[in-house]
Length: 465
Picture 1 (tube, rainbow, N blue to C red):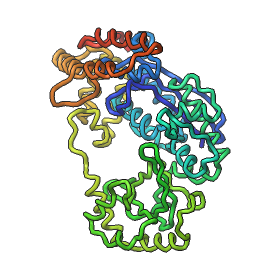
Picture 2 (picture 1 turned 45 degrees about the horizontal axis):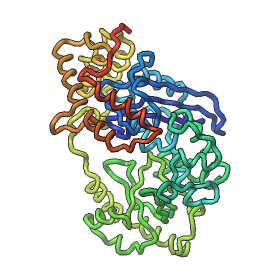
Picture 3 (picture 1 turned 45 degrees about the vertical axis):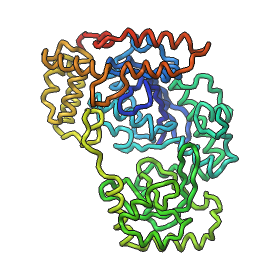
Picture 4 (picture 1 turned 180 degrees about the vertical axis):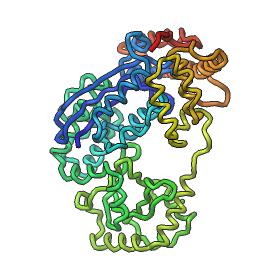
C-alpha cells in the first residue's frame, strides 16, 4: 500500500474553529516514489477571522482570502475528498498531521457534510513523519541533524529540520513545499535509521498497537513534552472499556509492586505528573512503542525488566482497576454549546448518510429543502450554513436572518459563548506582533482589512449549481 503525504495552511492553530486555506498532497508508492500530486486553495469563510501571525507565516494576503477566482470552502472540501477517495487505500501521513492537520481536515469534512473518517476507514491508515523524527532523534541521534532554535534548544520543526538535513526549503509554510520536505525527511529516516522505520511503521495499524501493548512483553516508549523526549521501558497495564483505543502502559524503571497494590484513586494519581508511573497511549495515533532492541540501555538488567513486565501482565485485578481509573481520569466531556465541538457525538444514520450524498448532487435551491429532512440536528444546522454561505436567498427569511445573527456573533463575539477568534481578538493579536521592515507592509494591509470587515462578511456568489 502506498502513501499520501499531505499538508494544510490555515487561518490559525485552533483545530475546531480555524479553517484550511490551502491543501496539498503527493501520492507515492510504497517505496516513496512520487506518483501524483494535488494542490488547491480556497476563499475565507465569512465567519472565520484569521490570525495575523498565520497570515504572515503563510504569506497569505487579504486579497488572496477574498479572491473570487478561488473556490469556496465547501467546493474545495468536496474536491479534496474526491481526490483522497481516488487515491485510497493508502497510508495518509504528513508532518504533525495526527495532532493538527488531521483534526482540521475532519472538522472541514464534518462542516461540509462529508464522512469525517475518510483517512482511516475503508482500508486507509494514518502515520506521522514527526513521530518518526522524534523517535529517530531520541534513539538514533546520528541518523539526522537536529537543529538548535533561537532559544538554544533542539527543535524538530520542519522548517528548520529539513534544511538542516540538506533540503532546500526556501518556500516553507507553503503546503506543497512542506509536503516535499516531509517526503524528504521520510526517505532520510528510512535510509539512515532503518531499525526505527521497521519497528515504528507497523504501528499505523491500531490492531498491531493493541497486540503489542497487550502482549505482556516489554516495549520501548518514546514520548515528547515541550520538545523534550522521555524514553522508558514499559508494559501494557490495561485498556479503557469506554474507548478501546486508549491504553495504559506501566513504567518499568519503577518497582511495580507498590503500583500493583494501588486502589483506583491511587492509579488515577499515578497517571498524572511528569514522573507518572502509568502513561497513556492511543492505538489509532501511531504511538512510539518500538522494540526493546531499538531502545537504549536503561541501566536495568534485561532479565529484571522482563520480570517486572511479567509481574504486571499477569495481574488481572490490576488491569481491571486500571480500566476503572481510565474511566475516572478521562470522563466524558460536558455537552458542547456549538455544533463544531459536537463532531464526535455520534455517527450519522444510514438515512442521513444518503441525504448527505444527495445534498452534494442537488442544485443550490434544492439543498435548502433537502437540509430540512436531516434527522441529526447537527447536520441540519451545518447544512443550513452551507446554503447560507453559498446562496442565502434560497433559505426561508427567518432562517437567513438567524444565520446573519450567527455570523455577526462569530465576527464580533457573543457573551458567554467561546466560538473562535473575533475581529477584536485578531486586532489584539496584531498589536502584539513586533513591526519590522520585513513585515510592516503586510501588517498594515491586514490591519486595514480587519478594520473594514462588516457583519455580512465577504461577498458571496449566488449562482446556481
